[in-house]
Image (tube, rainbow, N blue to C red; front, side, top):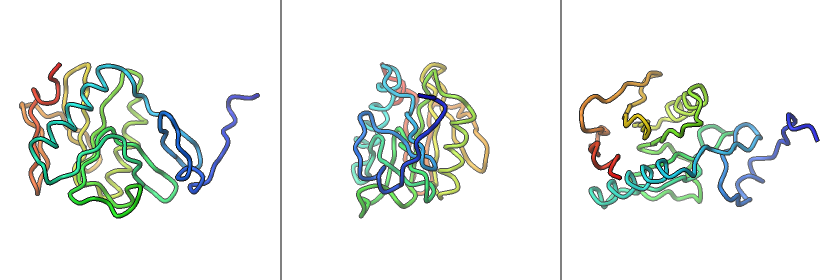
Length: 168
């Protein structure tokens, strides 16, 4: 079998199928995200834990299927919504999407995903690099590193410290 040939599936089939681990859906193609290593999982759980602990009235969850376009569903590493979604999967823009980089992530693929979140209307987009211990904010097409010890959203303000995120 030729491995370059991708089988296209419909949005309906994707949404009605469980994958383990879950996969993203990009224009009919199933895309496996780079997850599963210790550092990535630790940072992901730290972000969810500290957001939920500090802000009990928000919903911070890991890897919720989120529609970014009609034919695209992504799995943000952490997704924050201010009210529970009324649908099984997130069809509206999240308040915050957090991407945690894995060593295998390619910058072009990551930037494509961040741009989709931005175009969808996600108000706050964070990128966390566990290996380099860097925090960045994506806005208006550019990625800006946070130099201080706090990364935060705007209106409402949700903040995490470097220690919250990178605690081993």
